[in-house]
Image (tube, one colour):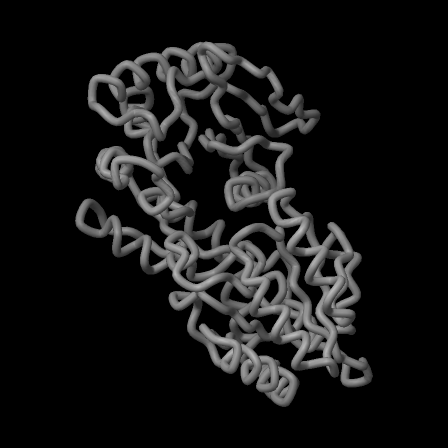
Length: 361
């Protein structure tokens, strides 16, 4: 029988926000019977919000510590040092009532190199799931790169969610690729379904190529496009204009994955703008294997480093996107064996075993 472990997970996300990889890892650990202490996005010293989630789950504690200054403003080493001292004290004060001495550490924060001071004997696995250097708004990301290097050196294992991110840190450590996974096994699509629609299941924001979608929808009146997911307030007007000018594009708002009628779709699309640095670093989005598990091939745009597979068509122009959609429509059933194999290699047990193997060794 598998023994219960305790994990402490550090993140810069709230527990009750739209689930990201850090939430999925926490739930994965819980699903295998472990206990989890989940540190949410730290509060600020001068402007506390006290909005952290009060959990009612037996095996997880949701905790919020404090930080001295925003991570993007820690440009100099003295500022980093002061913030680290402050955060360490806040974290330990939060942990004092809990039994944490033998916990394994899962860290999602690029700037938490000071965790080794708090946990000198614990295993620390750091998961790099964003291009933090590219996201830096000032100083050309030099301060971010410096903190990332320290964090990698002070970790026992480094996981990255893409090959470009692995390349970014490989001079400081030996990274492992840690992709998202499918929650469920592959389901073979039925031959009887009438499939004439493309699914876009995502958080709709400014990274989407709305011009691409408009031109494609106008050209392909024979196909329908369904947006399913929340829409950022910054792009609501763009989405309204898109649906107003293209009758074959519909927005359905957020729908739980289990309630989506997948029999309508012959593919899913991830249509981002070209040349966005943090998008260029993506090898697989959080929903990649979820969608593949329903038998849907994928057409991407603006994602040159996405996973290589015949069932995933990578494009960077309207013409290529159009051809990619046609390919998925024509080869839908012939692609199923490839999709099935891909999903079978990326299930929850595969990622859980990778985590446990790293902390054991």
